[in-house]
Length: 264
Image 1: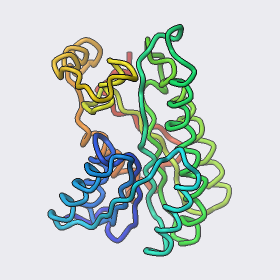
Image 2: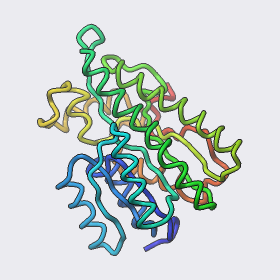
Image 3: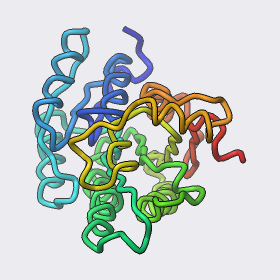
Image 4: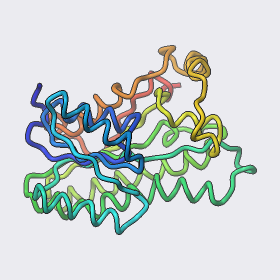
């Protein structure tokens, strides 16, 4: 086991699958204790079991990121159990593919509640605990290439991810002004193989159905300059870098992991 974030306490939201799972596994493999949170309890517990079996340290906690009460309870739990928080990865998110004229207000609000409100609440509730440790820390907010450039039939998702991008920069400046040693950056994945494509391509009601992987492969060949889709671990490696002291002079920045998509 390597030691790039040895001894650090990390919280990863939306960690039961996809990018969140990969982030939790990479951080644990590099020596951090990781608290995984999600609304998918059984998969979340299974991820923790895998981390522990590999020699890592992790726990799972049910957590709806749209709830301020649950955020307060999660941070209080970390404070009581570990006394500090060094790494916050605001990863939980949803994407509902739809043309604007077909999008319901409920769908729009669901995406903003999870993708924007969840990130805001995470930063708001975690910062005091991170600051109380006195050793600085790293906040990583998961955005998307859809937060950098427009995406057809993804207006709601893109709006939320663009908001995360600029929210991140403002938080970075506030932390820098406070001289608290806490850095805040956003990560912008492109076409990554995760369950989010079920609803991104199939619509909000397709969450329990699987999009044919060949469809995502074909899309990657069309829109990704490298010609293939990314893996969650590709994003997790970037998050690990931003969480570690190797990125100590990086704040308010965007780490784009997209196979060249946004270079066009």
